[in-house]
Image (cartoon, rainbow, N blue to C red; front, side, top):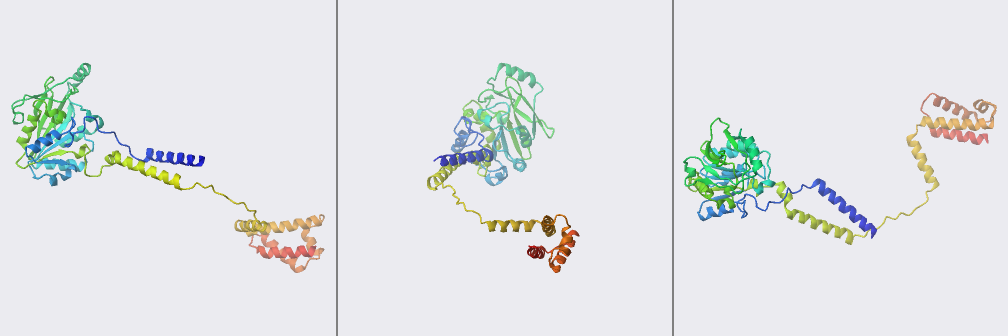
Length: 409
């Protein structure tokens, strides 16, 4: 039982380490207010606009692909309106920006709801450090804080956020029948100044009433136009019920949409994608539930059906001859024949020296030992070759030494 518990603990630890190091983690769930997508009935969603357009029989499209698919999804090549919200949860790619600007220049309208002056609850989990850069590339407008924003920001931070309205500036077709737009919640007190990258002044449609800072702009692009709102909340479900917001959206559609032109909702870049999105894949709870079930079934299989048997080894004594044979083969493989021959000759000389300690062993072998001349002459030749560092037949040397030992005994 102890072995099973240790095995289970080590297996669980290895799996947890793999999960912690290798598996991407979800970036957090959607806020309680929801996200700005066309099928969301929560305060930040656009389901109110979606149902309103359906009741008016206006074509509507939920864009769940990249901007490069706009031309194929829109029912008409021009006269369409795209509602885009910033910041985005799925970053747009460089080729998408170019494709979107070409689509607008062909005669379509881009309505951008950017959370610059307001920070709805859904933006807390959708921080985009490239928001201003992407907005400049999309609209051709470069947004910078107003020179007066330092003092205003300090005053606003001291007083805290306050509800404000967007005051209509001048008599314009887009603002017919509207006196002001009303965001949801308070503004953050950071006025912006927009400059067109082509050195033209964009048309200011509305300003923040209490500060006079621009908040809604209109910029032309080829045969189309881009409308940028620095407040994102007026078009949400919670914002449509406020005075002036729904009328402004209706004016934009009546002014820019052609007959049979569609209103397109950019759902893809808010996480509602039809293409593969790694973040959405790993954030899907169904994936984590599947992995947990697989882990549970694997643990049941391993610890429930597989017996844990200890390895048993039967000790056997090593045969002496096998040990000697193995040692000899090892030495024969790693020791040079010249070294072996030197040790054999030195050992034979030591044996003779022990027998006749007062005489030279080689002189005694030649004159007084009684050994066969053929054998001691062959040994002399092999001794000379060994001393010269030449190759020696070790087997022949061993045979000669064995015969000499028999003769000397």
